[in-house]
Length: 271
Image 1 (cartoon, one colour):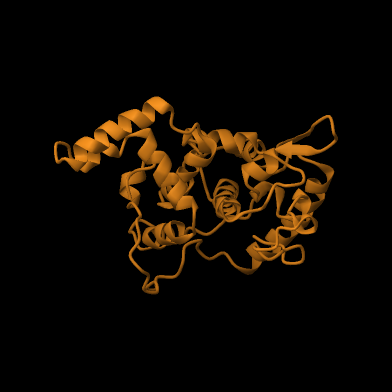
Image 2 (cartoon, helix red, strand yellow):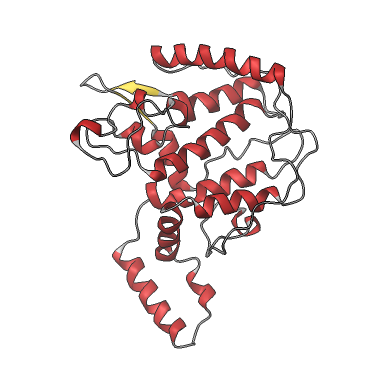
C-alpha cells in the first residue's frame, strides 16, 4: 500500500517533500480518486487517501479473482473503467479517477450486477467500507438541509422527536462520513466485525485467472506485466481463503460504528 522509499514524515510538508508525483505515491489502480483527479504540486497524500486505497485494493481483488458467474469480458470492462482508465490533459499530465469518485459519491461503489459463485459477506463489506466516501466526493449539505437539520435537532433535544429521525438527514450523513474518514478506527472495527460474522465460504480462495488491462499508460502496462507475474507466483504457492483465520480479535476500545446489517444499501447511517 505504501512505497517506503518516497515516504515522508506526516509533519514534513515543505515544498521539497510535497507528495506531488502520482507514480511515486502508489499503484495507479489503488490510488484515491482525489489524487488521480488533482495531480500536481500541493496535492498532499493524506490519511483518507490511504484508507480509500484499501477499499480499492479489496474491490479490485474481488472483481478480478473471486469466482463469479459474470463473464470475463464484463469483469474486464468493469476493472478497466473503474481502476485503469486515464487520459492526458493539455499540459501533458495524466489524470484519472473520475469513475471512482462518481461511484463513491453516489454510494454504489460495487457493480450492482456483480455476484459471486458462492455467496459471501465480502461484497457487503466493500460497500460498507466505501460508504463514508460519499461525504468526500458527494455534494455537501445545502443551506436548506442545514436549517431542516437544526429544526429537527431542536425538537429531538426537547424530547418531541426520537433521535433516529436525524439518521436520514443529509447533514447527519455528511458529518458521520467526515468523522469516520478522520481516522482508521471505524474502518478497522468494521473489518473485525465482518470477519466474525457467519456466512464466509469455507473455500473462498482466489482462482488463477487474468483480467486484462485494456486501458492505461505505458508505465501502467509495464507495472501490470510485473504484477501478473508476481500474482501467478503467489497463486501457485497459496490458494487459501481471503478471510482471516478464525481467531479472536484483540480487544479494542468501544467506538461508533454501525453493524453491517444497517449498511446493506450502501448509505451512511448513524453510528
